[in-house]
Length: 329
Image 1 (tube, rainbow, N blue to C red):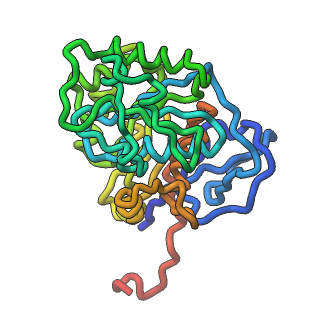
Image 2 (cartoon, rainbow, N blue to C red):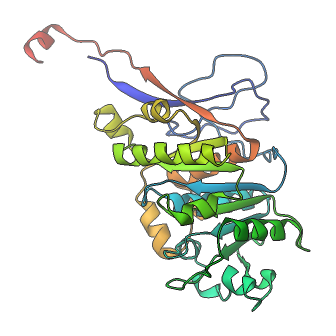
Image 3 (cartoon, rainbow, N blue to C red):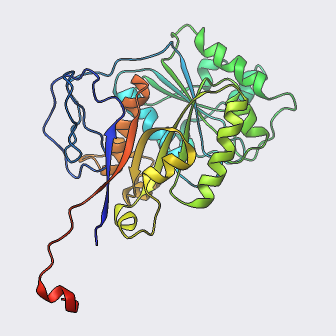
């Protein structure tokens, strides 16, 4: 009887790549990069290109909403780690926490004690926009902007138009237009979701390989497309290869076939996520890096270059069985 294993291959294996560093193991979560010459990519080896900066694709600012539909799948964790990964790559990033009632992005970034003003104070004329932006001391090109303080009420007129005004204000500010504006979308599909997706032209859908998350994700995809957002990519979080081999968890290929989205990244299950959350220290800043942190960095690379990857299930060679195998040996 054969077993199944998960390998991730690049969608565009013929794209130009620079010199490559030695392979990193385990490699099941990172796609290999191949030179411009056409050849069959190896399904086993994977490399990270640390010796070049990814080329920014598209017009700036790239307004990306990170959403999920179902809560608790790692949407805010993805926003924090991808945002800081983009900043480490040299791009200017503004992360907007659009979750009004349950604000958590500042906690994951360790910036909760520095949020003095929010967008509500900016709209009320109590402060300037640059005063509401919280600059990260570790990476000065990363800034956080919160919509409101926890347990506070939004003005009746706050909605998608107010968020569009906010994005336009970030485009024309004196410090310069950011390369990326990441919007951490609240869970669900209520008014907060509609407000968060209004100014976006790209979406990153975070899901886990369980049926409840996939059903909510499918509903969110339809709402995003109805709002005119066609560039939707997917991040599959909390993947466990041991459960996939045991057929206790859907594979990434199954998830991709069910949702029909381009795959931005695959994040393995990692116990370090809880530690980093409690410390307010994102995974991508860990030394030595963790598997999940490296996966978030690779997802940030693909987001910059508007690239994607393809999950492929490959069948392993069956083990040789001896004479006693007929008797269960």
